[in-house]
Length: 63
Image 1: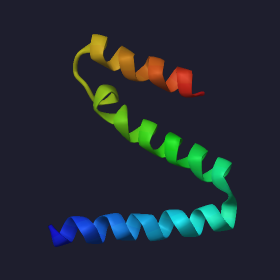
Image 2 (image 1 turned 60 degrees about the vertical axis):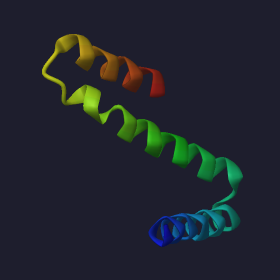
Image 3 (image 1 turned 90 degrees about the horizontal axis):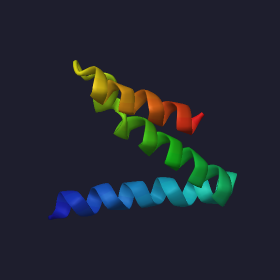
Image 4 (image 1 turned 90 degrees about the vertical axis):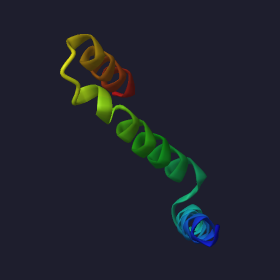
């Protein structure tokens, strides 16, 4: 709906500004790190050690 359009437009405005100000490589690297970090959050907070190890391995790979 209309709310989705507003969300996508606001993200587009921020990304276009960031691309013009900082460059494609910097913005792409920052976006990758941001999304990767938040995608592994459920693994790190898990009670199961096997699942938590997945998060730690992904953090190690990111470093």
